[in-house]
Length: 82
Image 1 (cartoon, helix red, strand yellow):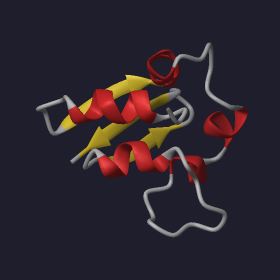
Image 2 (cartoon, one colour):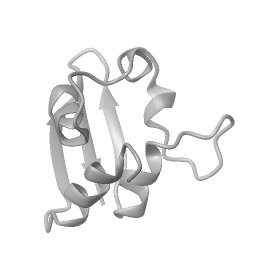
Image 3 (cartoon, one colour):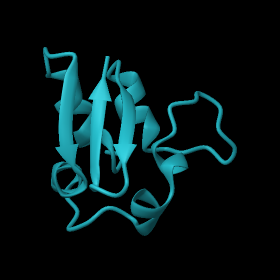
């Protein structure tokens, strides 16, 4: 199982079109104590592009589940929207 598969599975089971989560909640879903530092510092970590350079493996979780990520680094929250 890839690290972000649990996030994909969680998002895939959701019927709503908008999910608001803290970074801590995302970390718990993937089984970590905390997300990597880049998630807190760089909006690009939450990229929704299909071909970013370098590729971001975590984005496959929300894109494959039909969502796009919209982070708020100051609030340490992310909105996933279909």
